[in-house]
Image (cartoon, rainbow, N blue to C red; front, side, top):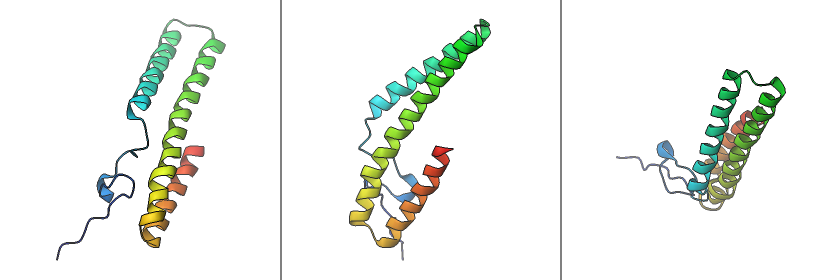
Length: 111
């Protein structure tokens, strides 16, 4: 007897291969991350060029804010997609499990 693989409510994939919520604009996220990558490379160059500490710290702050924004976008779309769909269409136990996973990750994200 073969066990049925659990499906992710928002994207239909099995538990072991859950994917980025379809609510996310993948191209926009990649564009944002490439911009952040450029910011980090710029910070590295500033350090190599021995630029003024405050100027470097300002750029680090901007890069941190940008990566936090990407995280917030993904988190929001996970809640609006995966969590909402799970509550609507999956069992209470499956939804509770997904919410518990979400809460653990929110705490990590907020550190």
